Length: 267
Ligand SMILES: [Zn+2]
Image (tube, rainbow, N blue to C red; front, side, top):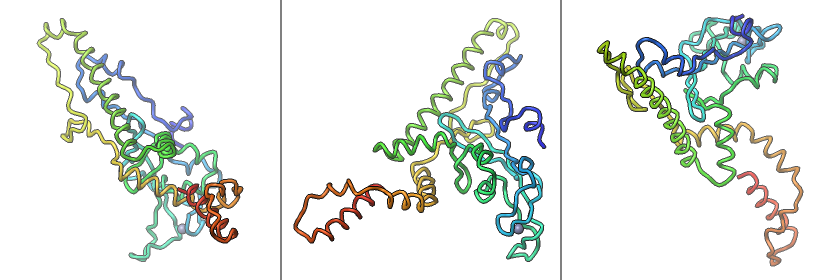
């Protein structure tokens, strides 16, 4: 079991605060590129292991995922470090060999976990990246209150830039506070690079586009479609009063109104 789980009892790696990072003898803007890391290896936490999503054979850990997964939050980005789990029975349909592995953050793996463990997973993932659940649910509130994906994406961008500016300001003040000693030593400090700078020393700041946000929201809605239908079918017909037209056969009118009210609720 990772030490993080057995000793520290957390999924999050400890993280230094910017103030302490700025206490070093020599500081650079890169010292403040200090993302959080989340370690996701549920296999060692489930008594009896996790069954393969395809054949239910017990999976075995097979090294870590080749690269961490970037997840965008409300004002910062963090990374999930995952593992690969190997099934000793499943056969790869292309190569015909037993090389089938699942990443620990695959939805099919998370679905097989006890709910109180699965709820610790902090992100809604897309094909290559993801968004934190807090940001995702905040986005749902945006949509439910008449604001669109573009407005949410713009809002996220403002929050990320604000956090970045805060770090920039902190850096400048730290440099200013050591002005006299720096002068004496002839020490200079590097300038902060722009948020989206893609050079090796840049932050590579990133905020998802409105299209990406829309796609991930649609994915979530489609996944829960059956639940929405179930809920809609249990609603009372009160909203039928929306249409006051009495020109058509009342029973057809009733069915039409019911259809409209359900479509409205669904949308
Ligand atoms: Zn299998």
